[in-house]
Length: 271
Image (cartoon, rainbow, N blue to C red):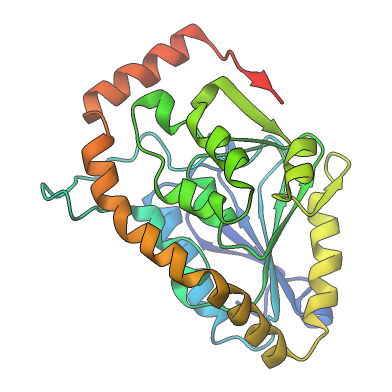
C-alpha cells in the first residue's frame, strides 16, 4: 500500500498513505458516502485485503479507520446485499466476520475516527479497534431487534467496550434510541470527543504518537490487551450462529419491518 498518497484498495475502500513516510500512519477510508458507507460484498473483501496487506508492510506502524464524509462512519451491511444462508442452525455465512483487523491477524494498532452515524454492522469494525475518537455529532445505535434480527456479534463486541447495562440498552432498544457522542464518551466507548469534522485529525495525532514507539513492543502490547478478552469473547461468538438461527425472523419478514420503518420515517430518542 506504499508509494501513492491515496489509492483504491478495492470497490468502496480507499487507503490514504500520504502520512506513512513521515509518521508511519495509514488511513483506511470506507468510501461509499452515497450509501452512508454501508458495506457491500466488494467492500468487505477489500477491507480484508487491506488489513492482510498491512501485515507485510513495515512502513505502516499504526492505522486510522474512518468513513468518507461527515454523515456516517458506517451504517453496517448494505441492505441490497443478499447472502444465502445454510439450513443448519450451527452455521452462518456472514460477510462482515472478516472485515476487521483482528479477524485478519493484524496486530498493529487501529484507531477509529467516527463522524456521523455508526450503527449495526459498523460495530464489527469498532469492536476490533483499539479505541475510538468521535465528533460531538456522532451517533451510535443497533437496529437489529427493530427488524426482527438477533444482535449477536455486535452485542458481544460492544459488551466488551461498554458497561453491561449500556451495551444491553444499545442492543435492545433497536432504532428507538440513539447514543450520543457525549454519552458514548461518558460510558467509555469513546476515548476523545472533537468538534464536528475533527475526528480524523485527532486520531492521526494520537496514532502518530503510537507509531513512534518501537513497533514490536506496540504490537505485543496490543496482543496482550486482546488476550485478556479472548476467552470470554471467543466463547460468546461461538454461540452466535445458533442464536441468530433461532431468533431471527425470516428475511421477508425482516424486509417488511425495514420497509415499514422507511415509510413511517425516523422516530427516535437521543440520549
